[in-house]
Image 1 (cartoon, rainbow, N blue to C red):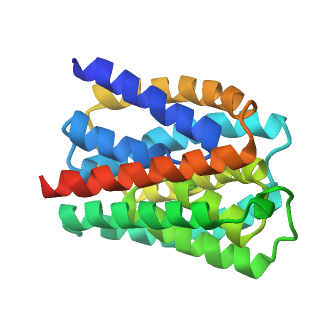
Image 2: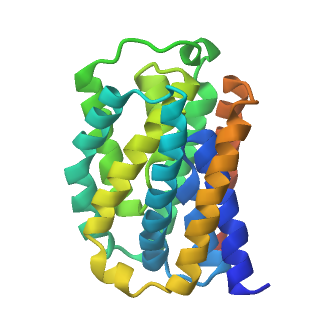
Length: 249
């Protein structure tokens, strides 16, 4: 299969994940870029930030039209993570590729387990959001975003649901705001790496992801919130396992 076809196929899946689940894009993009398209871990994490930032911004517009974005909570959450994301992005290039891969897998698995343990009633209605808790969660997410090259949605959604008490659909829409801000902040520290990327792969990957995000948004409206949460968690567990296996082969 040609690199172009692989990029288009993988991009479509990444977009579907972001549009339907509000996260998981980079968790899928990074392994695809490494194992299918031959990117190094450093290149893959930088490319994923480009792909996810563009796709999340597109998906954010669609979710905002339906009133599924908590702008105040999302902006506070994202703002708290901007500086940690920039610092993490600057440090990422100094870490060993195996360490990046292992850390990525561990964080994805922990986020998935947290989602599976979240009681159903916690996602049925939005709760009062405490600003201190939102800022602390946002700062931690920003640091992980910068180091691992992820938009943070696969962590933002569990945090917004389990820690801040938002219902699943609101968390999905709000997470896209957080992803866009965090990804751009982390990408700003990687301009040198971004210039060296293979744009003949990254560009079609991004285009397919953007189109996939629109389909994912429509699909999410037809699936129950609890089912979305469980699908999201199981995808994360599967990806974490594949990343561990790939690092050992």
